[in-house]
Length: 356
Image (tube, rainbow, N blue to C red; front, side, top):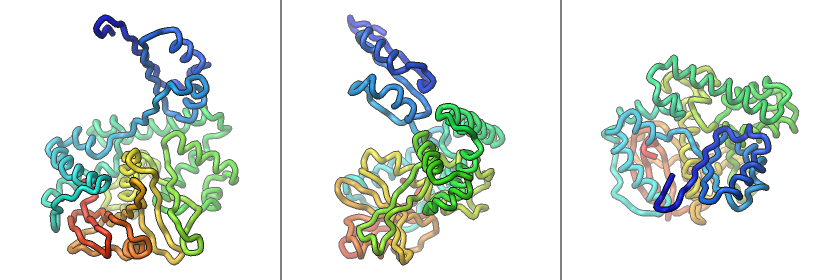
């Protein structure tokens, strides 16, 4: 391309993890050609970093390209709802990250039926662009299966020189049944056929290749609160549900609550540039808050309650956290309800989860 009097070069390389001596060659191109911008993409951050890191120190900016979020899903399927979503989402995000107050609606949301239908479909099928843009359920299922077979069973096995794909398959399937639950390594080891050392390696592989993410506990008192074992969440719900071989609608599933919780995690993970980290909180007595956000030096507890509220009723475990830590803000994500109250010094906002 020519900009003004200068010629600029743009080089784009996909699936860079397969490039032999990729780092050395990239450095040679970068050092030889002036006015060049190089874009490299791939499905394994682990392998790309290993190939490029030591050769291009200080010269690389990394970006993670996630599947469609709910706003992007609506843009592809229902632009009218996207406009409504954007208005309310901006208010919620500004309240959460900038403490910017707004006039909170009260009671049920007037657009709830349309939004619930779209949001639940999104939570079942996920956000891979080719899945979102395909109307046929049969074709969507095929796309998700192809992603699994060509990515998990082929790419990861090849890239990381795994002896067999069976253990990775068993581990992925077992994890799919455990979203939102605290990891018990002994059960994972038994379910996957991997010893502890290999299990930890495989879990690390699944994180590095954007299949799963571990969320660790928040604690201040090791005697009363869980402090070690994480929860595991998937990075795309269509991928997870396809692994379960269950694409049924939400009201026909026993894991509906876990699916919504995982979908909320995916959204918070996308917003993680605004946060230092995401945790969950659980006491040894059984009180639990789904997510603890760390935002600009403060903690914000978030409880996911995908039920119909009739009043500003603060969940019991959230109240326990508020009494223990006195946060400035707390968020309750509901099925269809708006509300606002103050508990002690804590501002508690109730919003429909589909506006997050």
